[in-house]
Image 1 (cartoon, rainbow, N blue to C red):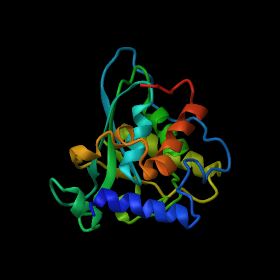
Image 2 (cartoon, rainbow, N blue to C red):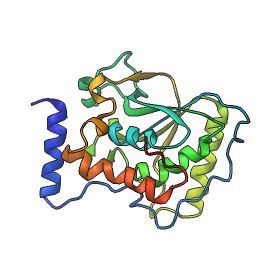
Image 3 (spheres, helix red, strand yellow):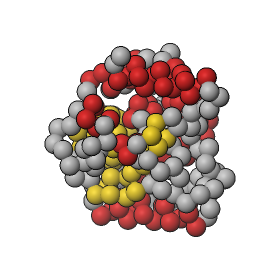
Image 4 (cartoon, rainbow, N blue to C red):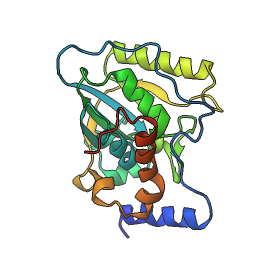
Length: 224
């Protein structure tokens, strides 16, 4: 059985057992506010990059592919010690990588802080440690990989703001870590939610995240 099939089968067993997959924002006790610290929206179109991790990269990629101002979202691996890792070794937990998504965005349309608001609101439960929904292991940890000091400042300030406001029922476990490298995942992982909309894993775990994005952020939602 392929690794993808194993993941889907595990998800089906989880559902049959009566344990629903993590719903985005389920750990929030109130609406997630806008960040008090953020970059200014650019006056001209351009390209900037953000990298985040939080559970299976299929769902994170699907969410950000539907955010206005996002040019591309690519599934991959970050945070480990092995160069050019593959899915099998990352899944073993031995490389130290997290399933991650590289987001290329236009800073004249969406800011880094606004992307983080989407991340914390609908993409994951940031209070979980080394797991999201049915997936467990260090490769599913929650991380913001900052590419410069400005991103680090915004991410750390936002986490402190949300924790102080007790937006979530538990403290945020999301790590803020310097980005060393991002390695794109294999082709069959790219656009997985779009290509396989009827996969039980996508139906129960990831499609609700995109639906939550559309409901909570209609002004940011893109139907592309």
